Image (cartoon, rainbow, N blue to C red; front, side):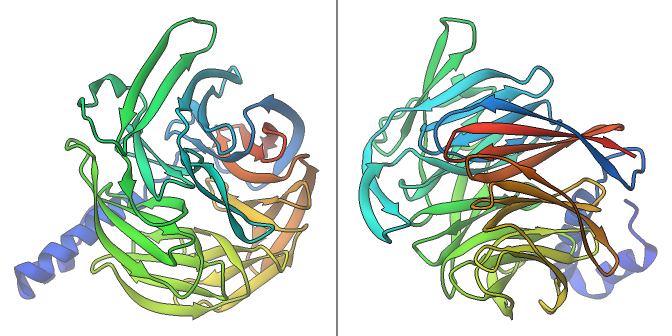
Length: 393
């Protein structure tokens, strides 16, 4: 991206302190506006569904940046499965050594005895070098060096988490310890800024958001620099790199908290519908949100939180994902046992498909090439992944 003469002039006019912030914004915008070079398309045609086995309690799925590998966070299985996308086979299993901890029964709304090493959500940084994983009952997140785990320094830190790597079709095993980086109680979503400088973590039971500065070449690879209180339970996070803002869905209330990414302080609380769970943002600054209890999705203004349009969904919409061209929205409906796909039109959503996914679908991520689109959907109660295949038109 080229920097205009006006921008360059402003750097000199307003001084070095202002200039430094402006340069940072320009660099963030350059990262954030990278667009995958797929052929244009305006329709997707559902072709088939394929089901793969993962492990108990698959909570979320995440592709690496090239979409050659998919990682499944298996909460009850206390593991991360690495799938080869093309062959649909498990390549490696990252298995945690369990240690006793306190968990949470969401139906009874009470603490229970459990294990610490239960992966929830994940985020890649530094060109897929580090897979950051939130551990439900450990009060923090861990960095997994997916291809260089033999390089971890030897430590005797008792808070470290031990992982054994199993290779499919082989008796070979590796093991290593990863540092636990404390954030808050019951960490959930992890998101990063496009420049790979910061991570944000929503902490369910702490009612706060952690901000960590990333240091990929310095153990333990991230440092907590700020803890931002929020009004109630936080869940979804959408980072707007262009405007240096982050949006936090307050699932325990009816607001979206806005953070200033230059100061890491709360900027605003936008009133929205009740029980917002997940957030994504498009290139126009519009937010898309799933309302878990209301069984709705909505398109909102990122500036005001004002609802632009909504649609009803099957019961308990959870994770949502945008296609690469930002024209299609995929919604996992947990109690509805379905994934719903919507075309995003100028003035509303048009439901295209409601596809049965048995076993409480909860997480989804998208693969695309010039001709095809795949939605990989994880089902929590039966530990499976459904691959929904579409042809682009």
